[in-house]
Image 1 (cartoon, rainbow, N blue to C red):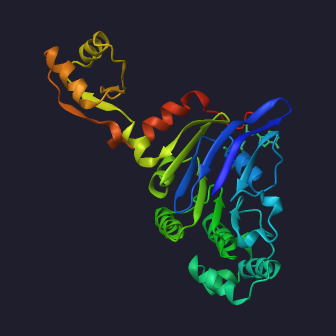
Image 2 (image 1 turned 180 degrees about the vertical axis):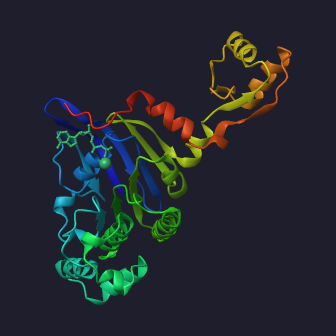
Image 3 (image 1 turned 45 degrees about the vertical axis):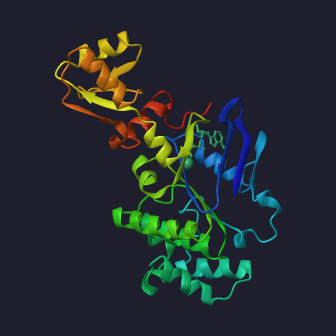
Length: 299
Ligand SMILES: Nc1ncnc2c1ncn2[C@@H]1O[C@H](COP(=O)(O)OP(=O)(O)O)[C@@H](O)[C@H]1O
Ligand SMILES: [Mg+2]
């Protein structure tokens, strides 16, 4: 279990992470989702002791990362797949990590096999790796010590759709055996296929969290009618706020039954009426983060 409590990190008056609290539970894949600059990496760096918090804490099974005697055996970490020694081969990087953790060299071959890096690829220098290969190597390094907890920052970056599927199966299997997985992404669709639980961050603050199913279910209702303005007006009269989407649909937080009843009372024909969850988390993500979108705005 990863527990983040009232975590704040400021940089010279700029608040990168602002009073963030959440947990990532065993047996679950928790997706940490937010636009670029939202504070995901900063939060994860605090978790693994690379950044000192201004206030609050992050603990793993109740302990700070810095207090773990042999952290690689308990927590697998992938923060920046390119932060490897570029002149070493993939195999050498794993061998050094295994030796540091006191693991047998046989673990290296097991991990290479697990992440589908061929012996030829493992013998090439990392500077010649594609981003996807670096991610696979990074995941191999994270899993080397057979940890119970994984902290992965944007691990799906650079993976093709088949690679994302592969990672989902790997992480789902890890969580299925009782492991805790926290992975970040700025891409909704990656997270949507991989995660069980979601923590959404925007502008350094948590804007939503819960199971993926809960967050999907709270997406409200989508209705279509030949006269969307009239429907929006009728909903307003009934005290139900709604928005007219660019595609001519009417969206509201109210459930479909209420929207249908209002349309009927107003004599409006509906051509479509459904829970908006079919639209995925996209609307939620865009609306939650629309006012916090920004790229690398440091003070
Ligand atoms: N060392 C630092 N000094 C100043 N600002 C920083 C530093 N590290 C991160 N930031 C700022 O904190 C914000 C959050 O960054 P980050 O945690 O990397 O976001 P994310 O990983 O969600 O894209 C950004 O605006 C970034 O520019
Ligand atoms: Mg980041």
